[in-house]
Image (cartoon, rainbow, N blue to C red):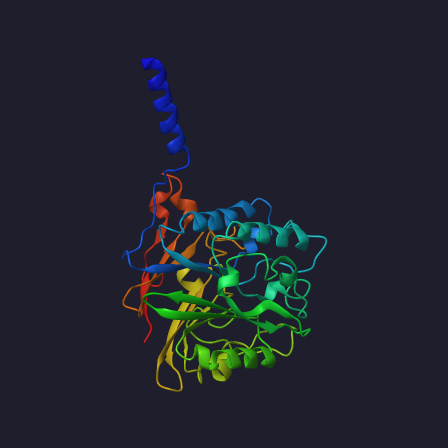
Length: 356
């Protein structure tokens, strides 16, 4: 009898511990009253190779698993979900997956967040045209309809039209109600937005019901690594507005846009040359932080593993004006042999943003 009781106790203990994976590094909030948003950089180099695809899914699975630990309010992604939006024969160098396979991989990774967390995805140049922005053909609406994530029912509040005049998540706004920061509106803007898209975003942010919201603008191409806004790029897509035009037409005159987040910029270079930050005053004299984050060549190659799993934890402190930025890799964090590499702690990767 005693043996049976002991055996039963051992079995129950094993069942209790089976669901709790022990990871060498488990991030936690600086303050228990904080909440966070997770920033995922351009995932195109994960989705373009079949062997890399599980790494991006690891990042989204880790995010879902840390919803409570990090009090995650939302997930942001800087765009370029795929390397090529519409190709049938991959060349094996710029990827070994067709566009269909790439979009399915991106969709599968975000499925880890569906019905658990709201996520905001903006479109990048590689998400348009055939290979990169030859036109405004985009398959995002096919794989990311507004109905796919039940969490959007409580957060998705505005949807703009794409180039065909169809309302899609290429231009959308999401509302989050927080105890310490009040109401936050995240506006996602298409790559190199048309004037119509900018006018839509301007009209949304100027609505009286959002007048007291803190507005975060998420768009793909805006800032370079040296902190300067992009003037122009050599894509065939037209008409188009790039960083400086977006600033002048939308951000600078705005009374409630308080932060711009983007990706896109990438070189075979040290980490510091694939991130950017700048603060400039808007028309009212208010400081507007602008942050660029990319990691797809973090391992030193254009066609490597996709970005070493790097993401950013944006901790919104309970003072209602400080965001602590930390750069972290769940990929390195899950193994004792690489756990010591799971944080990037240089000043350009770990810093505070002040919103006033």
